[in-house]
Image (tube, one colour):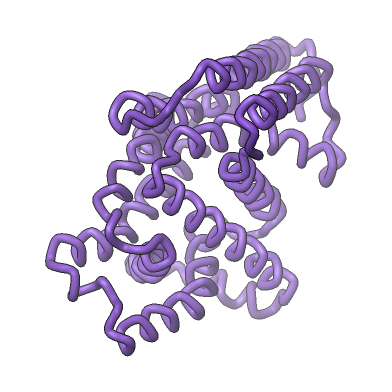
Length: 297
């Protein structure tokens, strides 16, 4: 249990400070960073699969084309999420990015209701309504639709929905997704190299090293999270997940000095209150289930 909690904390902390890494690559276009992230992640997970001799899943994918189609969808969502996030961080929108990951759990609950016929408990409905009000307030108050936050929350929410119904584990699924994504991204990197505009090797050793390590930076916290998910209660993971957007938010405001006006404060406050309601309700339901006063599931 303790090792699982530690793994979850490590995973969410690494995700929370990831903007520092992308900022170090600010001179490289977001699409190029995402392409390297995909290709090097594939290389990293293939090494892990080779070390474990974990190849049986490939046959299952070949025998079930629908699985491949599912992962084509999840790969596209993952690529859009990664590109949007990297661009947003390096364009000075770390706070907006954190908002996306704050509201992501509520988006996931809503998608579960819409697509998996899960029942929405009353206080979950209150939390979703309050978060929606916060988003509307930010849209009206700032005069701009919070597309960065909603793109990140929406793509990751639908990504989680597809992965929830997919038959592959975390490592196998990431391997297939990065393999599919690597087809267009590797071609893109080759075009950059031919045109003489590629950053890798040509932008200096430090930039090249950072680009090559994007695979480790991507896969390691995912593996930590996968371990935590097997050893930690869902309610605990639900609370710990706010470490990442909280650290992102603090980096945006305190380190990168992004604007945080009174309008943003009120909008964020509504969403934070929604998350407090959602988290407390989840903990109470989990406690009642463990006490045998509610059915499991």
